[in-house]
Image (cartoon, rainbow, N blue to C red):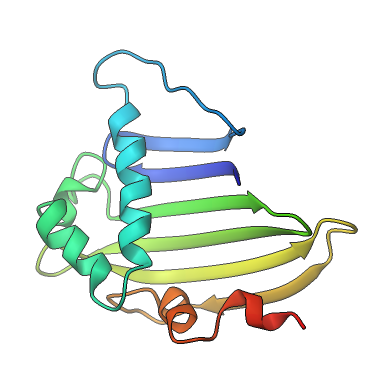
Amino acid sequence: MLTRLSLEGFKSIRNLENLELGRLNILIGSNGSGKSNLISFFRMLRFMAEPPGGFQQYVGIHAGGASGLLFDGPETTTRIQASLSFEMATMNADIEFTLEFAVGDKLCFRHESQRLRSREDDHIVYQRKSDDISWESHLLANDLQGDSLADAFP
């Protein structure tokens, strides 16, 4: 279950810090307040986890280019940063990533990290990080090729 979200620079969301989420969440707000854009962020995450090419497909086809995803466009915002925390049966998971505006109205991954922590004593059980610049997620791509986070545990 997603328990916490921080998001910066995505569409109409300039800066959303430590939004705590529960099992059921209701979005209420006036037109233009960012409700649909928050849902759009979750759709983008789904495309990030698609086989290689899914993220750039989302940026190019579904979003109409990176300019449409950046808060007030690339003249104002050049990157999107996100941090998500999940609660599972025996672990807590943290995922962070930074997307940067690139030539051709694209977004590239500039930073990604995944961390699993024991719910019992909060120590880090597993951790991966990538600062390689790429068009698709390095960490999620590795997961799709069989090197999943679940494989880190006996």
